[in-house]
Amino acid sequence: MSTTSSLITDLVHRFNEPAWLRERREAAFAKYEEMPTPKLEKTDLRRRSFDIGPFASLTAGGSARVRALLDSLKDKAFVFIRDGVAVQSNIPDTIHQQGVVLSSLHAAVSSHGSLVEKHLGSVVTAEESKWAALNAAFWNDGAFLYVPRNVKLEETVTFVYESSAQGHGAAVRSLLVAEEGAECAYTEVFLTDGELESGKVHADVLEVVAGARASVKIAASTEYRKGPTNFTIRRAKLASDAKVDWVYCDIGDGFTVGLLESDLVGTGSTSTLSGIGIGFGRQHFELTASMLHRGRYSESDISMHGAIRERANSIYRTSTHIFRHAAGAGSEQRDRMLMLDGTARADAIPMLLIDENDVQRCGHAASVGRLDENQLYYLQSRGIPEKQARRMIIWGYLEPTLEAFPDEVVREFVRQHIDEELV
Image 1 (spheres, helix red, strand yellow):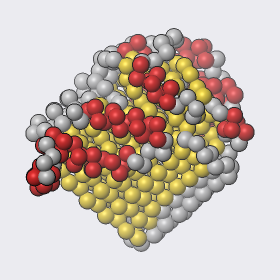
Image 2 (tube, rainbow, N blue to C red; image 1 turned 90 degrees about the vertical axis):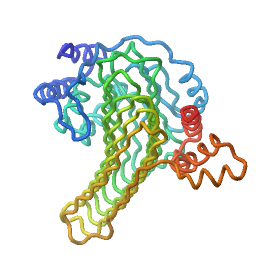
Image 3 (cartoon, one colour; image 1 turned 60 degrees about the vertical axis):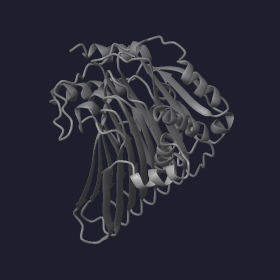
C-alpha cells in the first residue's frame, strides 16, 4: 500500500497546519491502519483498494462543464476545489457583513482555528469506520460554512468539487456550523473530469452541526464514476427544535458505499430526506439513509427514488432507530425503485429499530419494479411516442425531489445532467 504517514507530513507542511490538526491526523491514521476491511451485507470490498494519494499540488482550472456551472454561479456565494486544491471562490460582501464565514476548510483552519478545532470531528469520528478514519487522516480540503446565532442567510451557498485522474483519489472534508436560531441553505456538487484512476479511493465527509432552533437545508448532487472506490458520509447532529432537510441526487456508474444520516439528539428536532439515484453502466451503489432518534418528540421522514438501467446494481437501505427514552418520536419511510432494463438490479431495504414504547408513528413502504405498462399504454394511446412517454413517466417520478433543490442554478444543472442520462 502506497498510503503512509508521509502523506500526513506532506499535507501538514503544504498547508502549514497547527499541531492539534497534525495530532488528529496521526491518531486517525493509527485507527485506519488497525481497522480491518469492513464486511458489508450487500457489498463485497475484498477486492477494493484503500489506496490514496499522493495529492496534486497544482491543478488546471477545471473542465468546460464545471466552468459553465461556475459562470452561472458568478453572482452567488460559492467555493470551487479541484483535486483538493482551492481554485476559485466568490464570497459577497453581504455574507461578511452578517458575520458569516465561508471559505475552504484549510483557509478556515488558518483564520478561524478555534471554531474548526471545536467542531471538526464532532459529528463524524475517525473511530466509526475504516473510511471515516481514512478521511480524518488524509483530507486535503473541503468547504467551511459558519452561520452565527440568529443570522438568517438569504442566499444559498454552493460548494463545487471536481475530481480528475491527476488527483490520485481524494479525501474531501466539509464542515457546516449553524448556531442557535441560524438559518441557511447549502449545496454540494461533486463532478468528475474524464476517466478517473483505478485502484484509488475517493472519500468525502460532510459534518453538519445544527444548534437549537437552527434551520438548515442541504442539497447534494454527486457523480461517482467508475475507477476509484467511493466512500461517502454525510451526517447532521441536531440540537433541540433544530430542523435539517436533506435533498440528495446521485448520477453515476461508479462503485460507491454511502451513508446519509441525521442524529436527532435534541427534543423536538426534525429532519427530512428526499433522494433520487440514476444508475447506469455497471454501477454498484449502496446508500444507507438513516435517522437516529435520541430526542423526545423528534420527527423524521425519508423518501428515496431510484431509476436503474443497463447492468447497474443499487441498494437503498432506509433505517430509522428510535432509542429508549425518545418518547413521542415519529418517522416514516418510502422507497421506490424503477428498473428501466431487464439486466438492472435494485434492492430496497427498509429497517425500523424501535427501543421505545411511546412512539407517535413509525412505518415504511418499499417497492421495486418496472414502468407501469398501463401508464405507457395510456400515453401512447394519446399519440405520444413510446420513448417520450417513458421519459414523461420517469420525470413525473423524479421531479418533486429535484424541485426541492434550494438553488435554481444547481437545480437546472442537475436536471440537464439527468436528462442526458435518460436519452
